[in-house]
Image 1 (tube, rainbow, N blue to C red):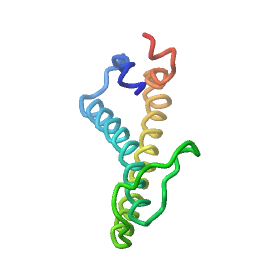
Image 2 (cartoon, rainbow, N blue to C red):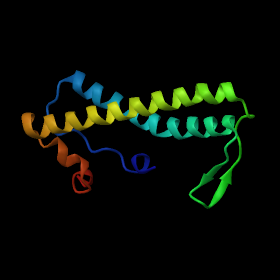
Image 3 (cartoon, rainbow, N blue to C red):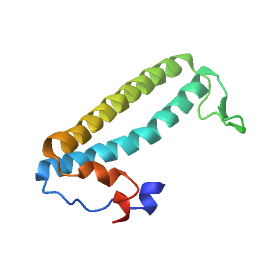
Image 4 (cartoon, rainbow, N blue to C red):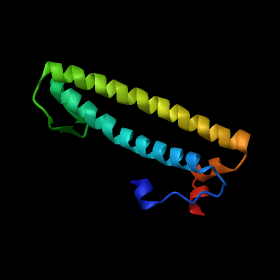
Length: 118
């Protein structure tokens, strides 16, 4: 919700077009995974017969009927997506470190609240 209401500041650096496209794609995939992983987890829990409790506030309804085989498949998908998220976060961190210490282009400062107010 933050990103929808607060667009990213424009790039101040001269970055090759492929890096800009890779960064944009990485962000899109990160947002997709942050949405998809909990939804697949909810589906998995429903299929395995577990009730999903939202931070102790209320219970979420089951999305699918109890199905052990489906629950196992969804567990595999959930784990795969979580591993993809971890790898992508690692790649994102490495990219930020590269820009900060190798390129020295100040790109890392865009991630702070001060950098986003330009």
